[in-house]
Amino acid sequence: MLRRAVGGTVVGNTMEWYDIGVYGYLAVTMGRVFLPGADPGLQVLFSLGVFASTYLARPLGGIFFGRLGDRVGRQKVLAATLILMAGATFVIGLLPSYATLGALAPVLLVVLKLVQGFSAGGEYAGATTFVSEYAPDARRGFFGSLLDFGSYLGFALGASIVTALQLALSEEQLLGWGWRLPFLFAGVIGSVSIYFRLRIEESPAFQATQDLHEANSAATADAEGRPRNTLHLVKLHWRSILIAFALVAAANSVGYTLTSYMPTYLTDSLGYDALHGTLLTVPVLLLLAVMLPAAGRASDRFGRRPVMWFGGGWMILLAFPTFWLIGRGTTVTTLLGLALLTVPVACGIACQASALPALFPTSSRYGGMGISFNIAVAVFGGTTPLIQEALVQWTGNDLVPAAYLVLTAVVGAIAVGLMKESARRPLPGAMPSVASEQEARELVAGQDENPDLEVSELPFPEAAEPAGR
Image (cartoon, rainbow, N blue to C red; front, side):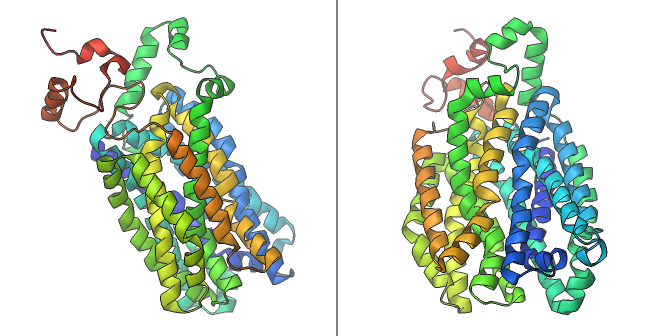
């Protein structure tokens, strides 16, 4: 069940980030297709603005699907979000261009990107919640990091397909019809992903909580902290929401800089042609995908906080040298600078998949994640390419994105200091999760000496008492 749950969730997450990544790598091309008569700088800003609009819809999707996921279940909602995402991406590939529809074409593009954003609002929050509730406590960091392993594989797949098209097609062919192919291919990937996602079963932690609430009265459920609505959820968990917001802002600012802004930065600011601007990021994304599970394992061993602090410190100290290397204009220095960016991304992104769900109890986890994660991504994630490109054009300084990343890293480091360590510990509101019966026996036998287990905080402490006590 664990393998099926993780596999089905990772495949779906790969699909989601393939969809997002394809647009990021075609940003310059999409601006020329849907706003052909504009100044090149305006075309880039338009395309990145459309990309950012996706994230404006994410908080609404996070609130809607988060509330629904805490009520009806994680599995059903995750299937729905994936169907919406794949369908919207496929339809983008069928859109008439500006030459056919005029001003209506970019409007329809924005609408479809908003649909993508709305569905994505429930995707990552639900996926991390789902995997965290399935994973054993001692390996939650590793299994959570597999989600983002899939995410960056999706980005790499999108980049590889765009690169292949740029090599195979002329510029006229790419602008005429070639840009459609990656979006249409999403229909194939989406069908496979939906099949796997429909085969996964509901998480045991959620099912246990549902059974408890069904057995108790509404008054008892309220006393246990089950939120009545979104405002009540925010009132109950405002501190956790703020901490999660700051952690996501820091990790995703540098993450989206690497994945979504770098192709535009290399092409528009540093003068690389579109092919090399995309191609240079592919090996870096593959390197990052490999680093994520390693960072997840490290967080299981050393703790989430030390790993996240290491990534934040790396960003603060090396942001300016990193962008200086990228700006030298040689392939070697550019690849080295991009590789340096992978370290803080790996440390932050790999840990957030396991650290964020541990901030909320089972009955509020999907909803709390949906609000905090998606508002942070909307403000500091999807808008990062737009903000950084605007800052570069405004100041004329190619190093200004580094200052932006240093600022967000400082905010993230403060949030890590306020966060309670969650490695190897049960999720709030849930019993300990183990990988085998032998591990369960060892856990119960050593519960009094276990620094990672507080029996008094378990939802059913009497169930954890060994026989004879």
